[in-house]
Length: 225
Image (cartoon, rainbow, N blue to C red; front, side):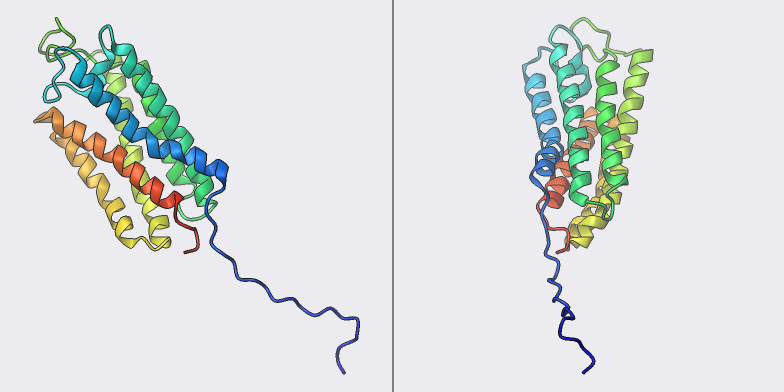
């Protein structure tokens, strides 16, 4: 015999089972799911209630101007906090897999851009707030606001491309294709802002809502599907 009586026999290795995110990560990643819908809903309510505001002429950012502007400022700050929390939660959800580093980092940059947008308000223009001239003059804080928004949305678009890989890895190949195409639609909206403010609003809204959808999909799908 080649085995001794006391020699332990190897135990069978149980196959790895797919795991969903831990509760802490689920709570954090909820921020990324809620940020967009809450921000947009607050903007729509304010825009409908503020006198003189017209969605076809004014950007949602301009709601931070005037006597009730503090509401939109808080909206920016809250959205930024939720995006950063969501990025931290998404990092734990991905748990070192594809996109775990750059995807959440880029979403965090987007969240920080909302804080910068709150610190540097947009310029008045197109008659809003009441009494403002129709033609806006670009100020220093207005330029900083625009730069923050552009940097944030470029980072968000890059995150969509990065996160297409873990989506595909979880079996959501259609979602992965859509995540690579979403930046095209977002940037097309921004490019169309010269002709219509609504195009810019639609592009920005689409970006936030797609982040909600893909974050929810990644958070509710096991890593090893």
